[in-house]
Length: 174
Image (cartoon, rainbow, N blue to C red; front, top):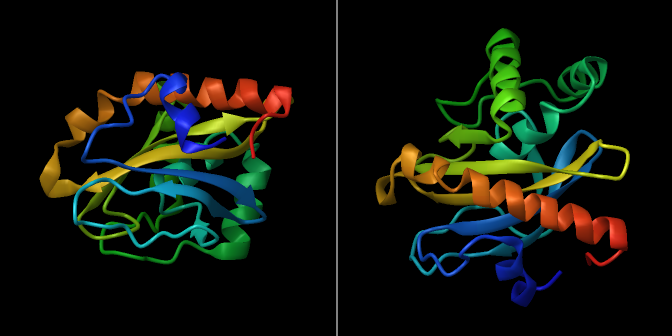
């Protein structure tokens, strides 16, 4: 999928505040496969090809929330839950509660858990079998907007994920 197909997935990608990212699960982490920066001078540290932890990112939590519990346990046992910022969830019980919330509402939020001063909203992308293979997310500096403003984009982001899933089923995502 290239940038020109993104508007057809239901989100106004012209918004100037949000960086957009797609990531695929790669073992016990995610790999960023596509990133479009916002027009703002503030940048996230993630780069295409970079491995991203599951426990400390919105895309990662969106994926973890939809994995079988024994697979989540296997991931956390292998990777641990290292603190990347002072706000990273490092307690399994708190993460389990967060994943339960993610399953109910359909999206995950990262409040400066991966990078200071950055907030991310993400949704999972599922394969034909209904397993999460990755996700898509929006990220912005915390001082450019509120969490509520970000969460208002969740219906459009969920619709975009459904569009990606349809393309996956047709073999049209690259």
